Image (cartoon, rainbow, N blue to C red):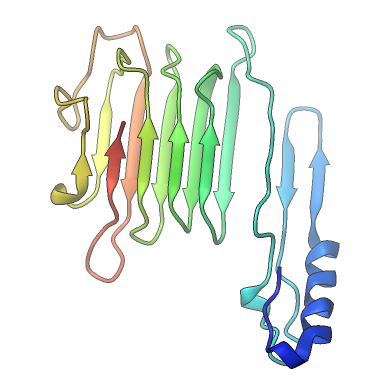
Length: 184
């Protein structure tokens, strides 16, 4: 996408063409990398207001012998993860935008979701999930445990060694406060 004044449609089209040319999908056998950059500024069509508005990526669910090791980076925009049926070894996200995730509690898995500029993180987990360590980093009044009222920050939930090794959710402070962390 690109934005421009109504009478500068041609400038927006130039920026969109450059965004399209920046899109790359590469694989080296174990890593798939997807990149979508910005176009250049043309008149009122600003580089910073261009890019890929929505990219859907479907990955295999993983298995016990081949769990997923995922890193998701968003330079600008929301991240939505539907991994409830996946087998995860590691999941790391770093987003400039809200994150909404449905996640499994794979035994021994590590999950770390980071919202860079006081954006919100909402996570749906199985009701019986276990984790050796749970770290929720946000302003205290912006953490909602939902149905998981037994969670204590920095502590274990469930029997150690039966679920996640680590669940860490971080909304970094921006302009004096953090975003919300919501567990569902």
